[in-house]
Image 1 (cartoon, rainbow, N blue to C red):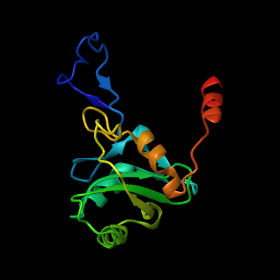
Image 2 (image 1 turned 60 degrees about the vertical axis):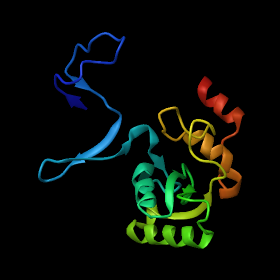
Image 3 (image 1 turned 180 degrees about the horizontal axis):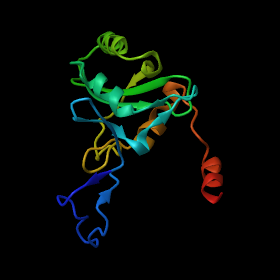
Image 4 (image 1 turned 30 degrees about the vertical axis):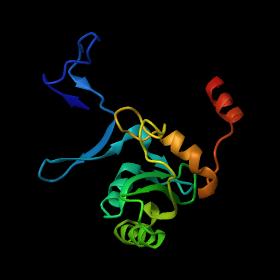
Length: 166
């Protein structure tokens, strides 16, 4: 939640009548009063072992590796996390990506480590349908396109329809 006169609402919407605004971000304040953002609340994954993981945190770690340009972390309800990766250049060898994932995993706790990964066959951009117009990954599209290669269980359309009608 944020508060203050710097934000009065979105264009075309009425001004906020209260002083608090739910941003949808997950964060924490450190002992010095600095705010650290960990990700978006709606993106949090709950693993099959009940651990909540912010995929943006793991994606940032993956993208800190020189050979990884983009990453989408998946694993809702799965026993481990998986990633779809887009290398920084076409000449990146799979062994280089594997070493980068291994280095990243060394920096992460066991519940946030990547067990399976694949390189995407197209960039995460709006032209491919893998990202929105402003560049945010479309996690559902990335998951659907790579679920079989990662061995992910995808909910059936009928299951999704049942959830919506409940």
